[in-house]
Amino acid sequence: MAKSIEYDFVWDDKVLIGPSLDVRGPADLARLWNTPFDSLLREPVIQQTYFRPLVLFSLALDRSQGGRGAETFHRTNLLLYALACVFLWLFAWEVSGRPVAATVGAVLFAVHPAHPESVVFISGRTDVLCGAFLFASLWAAARFGRHSRRAWTRLIPASALLLLALYSKEVALFAAPLLPLVLWLRERRIKAAALTIATLPVLAAIVVYFASRIGVVGHGLVPAASPVAGTIPQLLTSVAVAARYVPLLLFPISLSARHEVAPLARPDFVFVAGVLLLVAIAAGLFLTIRRRSMWSVPLFLFAATLLPLCSVRIIAGALVAERFLFIPSGALAIAVALLPGTAALLASGTFAAFFLALLLPRVPIWKDGGTLYTSMLRDSPNSPYVHAILGGYYYEQRNYRRAIEHHKRAFELNPEFKESLLNLGAAEEESGQVDSAFTHVRLLLRLSPQYAPAWYALGNLYARIDRPDSAASAYRSAVRLDPDLAQAENNLGVVLERMGRFEEAAAHYERALTLQPGYSDATNNLARLRSERAK
Image (spheres, rainbow, N blue to C red):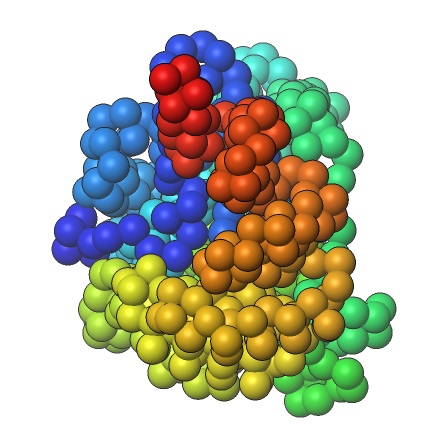
């Protein structure tokens, strides 16, 4: 994946990596600590639930070192990936005592074709950073846990690393029980009381994490809205999603940057497969833990770090995403390390070659927005989301004809996708098709009269055809519906200034700057207005 160093920012990278990451002093570090991670994503949600300050700090460090280019960010992702592979290798070696087998397993993990979404995609740093610290935590538990004379110190290094993993991604929380489990499996003579005492640092790390988290994002643990409505469809879909991950893990021949999975309204064969999978995992965990077998480690790692993410009540975006496999796929490395016999290792090596052949064509997909979104369209030609994101990409490239084409298709595929109408109107406006833009924006307002961005778009159209009174009215409606819409405040100031109402215009420029400090358009407009008034 070394070629990814030359790749560009794509998808969420372009909104995540921006001026909000600039650090000029302690105040900015405190601001980043108190910034919910999902507030910086392409589609921020109202109720934020992602607390990942370590990821933001690492991105801010890269930005301070590499400016606005993507190369430094890609280098860091590759370094973290290497660290994740090394610590997973050390952990597999520690629990198996077989360095060659652990090496084969680590190689299998390193070349897994589902990993580019976590490694090559800069925003996937949450996975590689969390994976590096979590695997290091597991290694520390296995390596140092049984050598300490005092029970309460046995898992302190592992707990400190676990806390860093928790500050990187929430999935580490589900893997926390692995630390005392590994100690229990490694130290056969440990008593229940000593194991309980040894677990206290793990619990302390979790308490510290939740105290930090609650201070930033509150008590909410899951997104307010699920992509699947209804209790029964949520249950059916969650079980079916678990079954879909198994072929992506073991036989990843149908990978995609965008997996389109429809919610289930009634049981089907995928749901049945999911039920069988859950029963098999439960039985496997029961038997291996009862026998105190090391095989419980890969099984628990897989189940604990993947199955909770299959719940559609936790998912905030696509129902299936390959980045969710990054940490669970570490179970493959540990399982290979535990396999007996030379033949098993040879078979695993062959499997690694198969994975590598699938990996090589997956990496270039993430080269830039054009290659990524085109691959999405090829995999999901009837996805309104994919057409909408392609429309946005072509709009940024000023290819308005293609932007209009894809936004129209997005609306045809999903008439409830109101953003597609909004973006369609914007593309038509930029291409000079003002009448068509008015038609689509007014249609959007009929469908969603309380949608503030639609009123903002209508104001822009009126301003374009030199109807400042109508534009001001539309902007006021936008501000009334969304008082935090800084762009509407700024544009309202522009049309008021055009009408000669300078005091009001200045007030709206100032309001825009209050809402969005550093907003360049409002800053320039206010400075120009004051300069002209002074003359």
